[in-house]
Image (cartoon, rainbow, N blue to C red; front, top):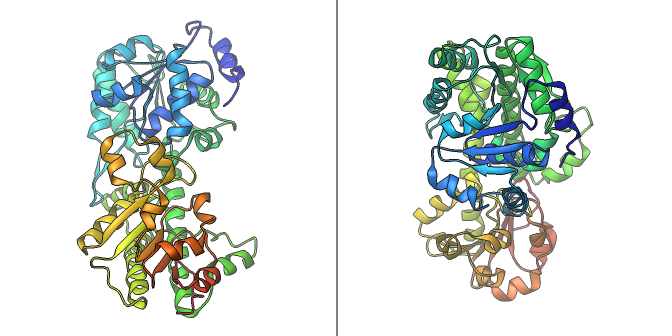
Length: 457
């Protein structure tokens, strides 16, 4: 974590604030709690709230559903020393805070329909009791024009006050918030945008207090909104290209990882193929705005569809591997190694994992998921019941072993022992590219992997 120096510098330069600035975090999801931990570690007092009372209660006990090993110790330490507290009422948080970070996410449903009503509702509540000189920072990703045309107007209409005159308002989004960690958020170079210089400078000092690099500042909010969405679009296209090239490598007997190591430094597409579409959330926000503006984002739409098809391709690899073993998915026992979306961490499950499981269950496969990190910190009986209690239990009698998250433990799998436990002939499908195909096949397994077109059977 950063030292308290940045926070203290900001406080000294803003003598109109109280001795110790208090930051209100509105939204106790991943984005909000990561902000809360970073601000508390930087020396700010923090108060968190959320519409979900049960979520607030869990936070008050130092419990989270993501990054348990990383976040919970910091959360509990700051709850004990009083630097971080929770409140059930937004009004109570607002009364205590000179700075408010709004992390209420933009809602995007499975069909890609974008809904800002939750953020609007939150800002209307804030506006109804808004005091002068308060700083409000939007840390959620929104569409182009939303900050100025919707969010700012909601605050001004509800409060009767004016941005830049009576209170201060800025936009500093966190892209890919579902994949952020404390370290990545601390190291992320944040955009900070505002309509007026005072709001921009105040917000930049606040965000700069929890980040290692100075924020990128702009008085052009629309450009900032577009920049975040364009970055996500580029990432989305990159993953789509990597996934398509990986499929090509499979069909032509080429190892994608070998190709990747030989690419020239000026070739930027060096992403690893994955079942996880990391920027689909931001892509949906961009595409919704493009459609309403009469613009056809053909490349982005194609990339999103291509990434969705990769999940189906993953199912196909499992089916093909089982077929090579003389088996079918129906009634096959499939061990799924790795559930957490982050390697070597107790994190929330990958979005693709849930979809993958659903498809296989519909095909009547018998699934045995195992994750050593989630097993250690499962917070409910239902979570524990879902997971195999050990690697041995997960793979014993398995017809297919799928590497879904590449924890270091799985890189060191004892293939000879697996052979004794599995129901041979059996398959290993490696979605993370952590196993050597030759070693796997030498032990008698059928091998399949994303982009690994080097299997012999």
